[in-house]
Length: 107
Image (cartoon, rainbow, N blue to C red; front, side, top):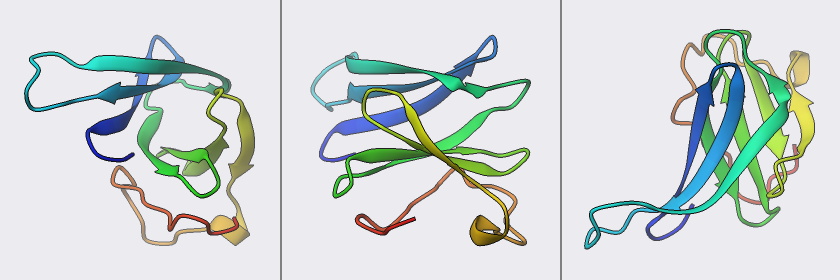
């Protein structure tokens, strides 16, 4: 996200979450700021592959690898939009763990 603040995509027992935390080099542990439970994202096996934050639109983009989908998520954890199909097709992409969208782009 910015500075020493990171967003981490996780899944556990079919539940998808985004954890926002501070990881500062002078501390031995992470400071958890917020944990977003994504009830609209249904995981079977592999689920969230990567996450990025758009500070201009104040949303997260989280990626599911199979089938490839991108979720637009509000800071409260509500899935605002599921992006996939021809408009959002990424032919040849196999891994989106290092996802990045330019801040302010209108998807």
